[in-house]
Length: 69
Image (cartoon, rainbow, N blue to C red; front, side, top):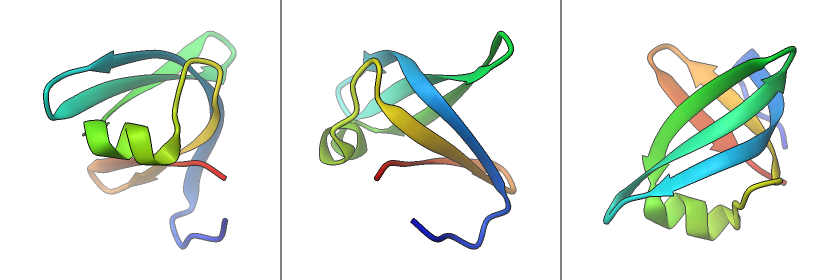
């Protein structure tokens, strides 16, 4: 995956809280640090995210985008 955003944090999904439309995805980025992203439920499903998935949290300005390969 190539992307222009420089702020990319590799990590592992530790928790997913699904709502009707949105979801909160918690990612362990190491050294006891976590980052939480609010993304659509559809995105969780299309990316095939589950606890244990390896992901990249991509931070651009005020947004956090999750990418998976």
